[in-house]
Image 1 (cartoon, helix red, strand yellow):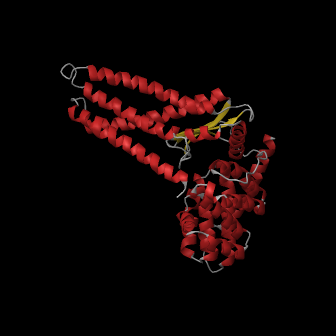
Image 2 (cartoon, rainbow, N blue to C red):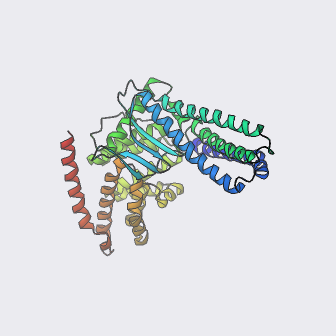
Image 3 (cartoon, rainbow, N blue to C red):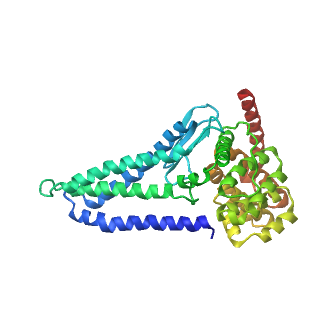
Length: 401
């Protein structure tokens, strides 16, 4: 288990400890002494809901204001799966339900000037909101504690309500400001990598590249890092998908290999992702010998990661492993049935590329297994749709230019 996985568990344990400590030491006695305002359990549930939603909004509001202070443009705001994002076709913000990389939400931005814009305000502003929240709730808690139960029997209930909301906020912000890479995006880790100008420019290039990919715009060339960390993996990933879009499979494999060679500095999840990328691309090249070799070298954990199909690259790897190496029709169909759902979870700029790769994989598998029935997937129809979609996108890009 790598350092960031261990730290994630430590942070979750600390968050749980805070919740249990405050719950048993403060909130439980208050609930036992609560007045007749509402059933204490129901009031606690409402306070938890308000705490989660309210703090999630404050965190992203802080990110929004911080982005504006730092000189960034915003193209997506996601709070607990409720997402307002810029539509690449209409160039206007539209609503949808989407997944996100973060504890409670995610705000996506891009710099107006890669060299000048500074993202630090996006880290500090959520803390300003929590400070305001803590002051307001702290004052209210103090007022309610000073009110006699005889004068206002519901004062204890409101005390419990405010304490619960404040506890939820403290737990969330503890995660957000923890100064290390965790299993979800957090602001504390961002501060650790923005300690010098070089990293700040690289981070801005990453933000700009992600925006260009999401909007279907030409992506500027970005440096490919030889030493890969969780941060530089995401920077390399932009060029990786650009090479896939250009059909330069060998160059994409070379980028994946840089991540594989950096196993010691990369989280387990991203290392396994890179292994899945390389294996699937070797098989897409119909290089079965190299693919079989890579498959034999895969760890049990990497094979399990692929079989769980938690990401588009893992899905692609499991589909090709099942169809070409394991010769499992049942697992191949399972992967195909899950493909639409899993690809929709991928960043919007990668979805079309992943769809095209899955289509290519299905074509190769069908050729290798002529007796397998794929009639339910309308392979020829999908090819025609792909060609029509490519023509439409090319026309749209020409109009943009």
